[in-house]
Image (tube, rainbow, N blue to C red; front, side, top):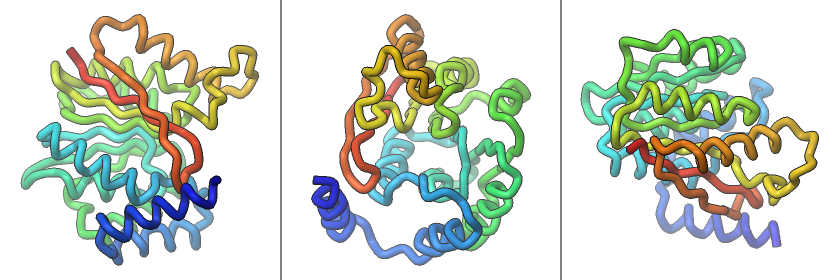
Length: 218
């Protein structure tokens, strides 16, 4: 079945996404520089691009840069004068991302901040409010990152959190996997916080069985 999921993703990409040298070069550079192959898929990247445009986002916050693949998709969604702030823990990942952003021609609208995401978020004041937030970092921190996204957002801010199904692992109440524990804490937080309207969608494809949260600040 997994091979079928990949084939369908390839079919969709072939029909609806154009060949993109900058994005292909980004993935190749990430691999050459030893970054883990955990970027969003091409179809997911296009979804982020469209969601940010639908939201009319002029200011975007990303938690988890990696090599900048999703960052490029989001930066391309910005209108003239828009800005994206992206947070990355690892200095090496951030350096690779900077190379990729320059090659893609979007470095002028992206501000990469290096360090633990919780600290970087706490330091953000004047840059807010953000119109769109994409969270794809350590899953243990997801609930906190969403709370910070609310603080740094406004009514109408859109929040997307990736990797929230984990091949069904989210159902494992007794799991000792910190990523699953963190994901379940995220759902507990979302269900209890009156400041958000939220849902989650399961996905299958190049990234196997997973899903994402889509939320809007009230």
